[in-house]
Image (tube, rainbow, N blue to C red):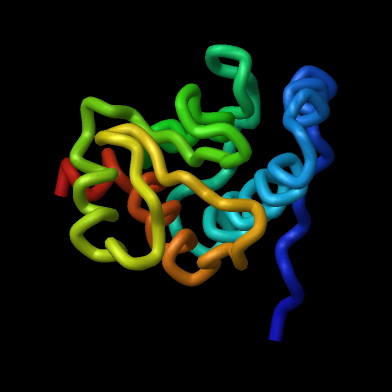
Length: 142
């Protein structure tokens, strides 16, 4: 049985973006970051991920493989105290998540899953959403 995949050190500019998030949102989004890397490691044809900033927010790209759509972590503009896992609004990803996991998440339009840091992270459902995003282009081409 293999151990948990190694989570890379956060690049300095991305660490600065995480540092700007208020607690406890920061702690929860760091947990989502760990889940992104774990899901990528468990999903064939996805790795390596590129971790960078997009619009000043931590972003995770499948640049090397082109298998998926960008995932960003941030703060929703209209909902104070929540964290957001953001997806490309020009994809049907959030609509797919809404159809499958309506009870697990709060949604913001066709762009984001909102996370309440005072509630347990729905890890299993979120991992499935992340895997769908990380393989979006590969699945669409099939």
